[in-house]
Amino acid sequence: MCSTPLREALFISGAKNAAQKHFPGVEKKMQEMYTRRGGLYDKEQSEEEYVKIIETLIDRGADLDARDAKEGCPAIVLAARHGKAKIIEALLGHGADVNAACTEGLAENTTALVVASVHGDPDTLHTLLAAPSCDCRPAQAGFTAVILAAHLGRIEALEILAESKKCDLDAAMGEEAGNAEGKTAAHHCAENNQWECIDILGRHGANLDVTDKWGQTPHHAALYFKYDKVLEALERHGAQWSPPPELPPVGAEGREPEL
Image (cartoon, rainbow, N blue to C red; front, side, top):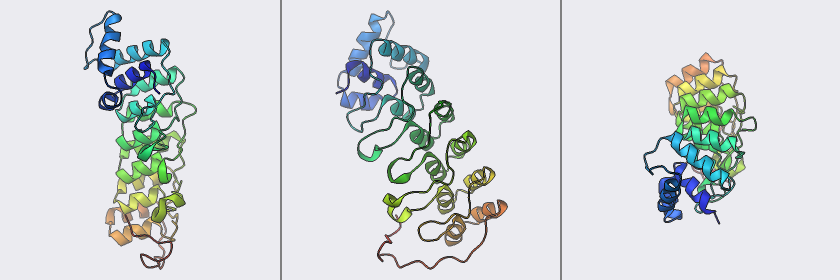
């Protein structure tokens, strides 16, 4: 069960709606707490003011490892979800685990870095990656921060992740990903017409000839979908052409329909 201080911390970390849903009355508690500090409570306070409040809560014993009731997410993930880089910096400064992950439902194993890559906020990414112990561990089904940024076309986020040298640009999705097993960020770029992301991966030395479970390369995917700009980007970075592999029919053992 989350402590009252952490409920307030969740609220001011940006997850206002979630906090209200899971912790009824949290806004009233927040107002009472802030009034006791001699200030005037305002939901539209600046992030700097919220940082001061969070630091006060931590000084009063807020549990940095406590999690919300719905998805088991720690405060650092909730802050990343809302692009609160200064709050993340404050949490890390007080010893929060940069790699702490959610534990329930669709958010299971999701870290703040994974969330930041989805939303593409550069300040949040820089703050997280500056932590010495920050890594690129995957979320569910092997989705890494790099794969998600490539899949969604978060160009600036992918550039930041690649420049950090902390993430494996060639990490592949595992067998829990089903038909997507073995796909890397390069595959996701090619399948989603993210040619600018191919350029980023190529500049930073990613393997653009990597094969997935079915022996398909990013080049094969771009050919199949007729994405000319992706093909041009692959050629710019020296990707090799090879005949597409023969795939078993959809529905055959081990091959599921494309999602």
